[in-house]
Length: 135
Image 1 (cartoon, rainbow, N blue to C red):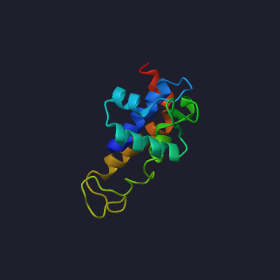
Image 2: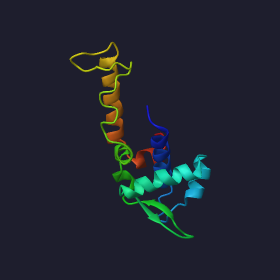
Image 3: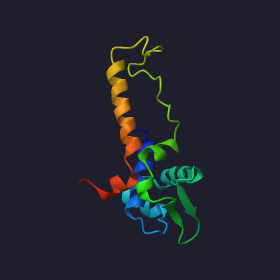
């Protein structure tokens, strides 16, 4: 359901939120901690920085940090930095060329309900919620 880029972005953003010390976290450290390719993660983080979610600092003590408190950043905002909100809108789960409320496939109603539930999760869950861990 989520692209690899989206998963890496969410994992990195949560890691930054967990370590919300105010000082930047280096890409190398994040890549090692998350066990993801450093170059790929660097590109993902730069996209988040270009969108204004992160601040990027160059140099020896450089890295990335959040621009806002983790409790003010939703997962939906992280996702919006990577792909348009309607990227999966209109895509049929079964691959039909035409699938809509007016001409639904057999999975349309359940798929739309599931997507709406996932959308609500992303809209209402913050980085701080995930950084805190399970309650």
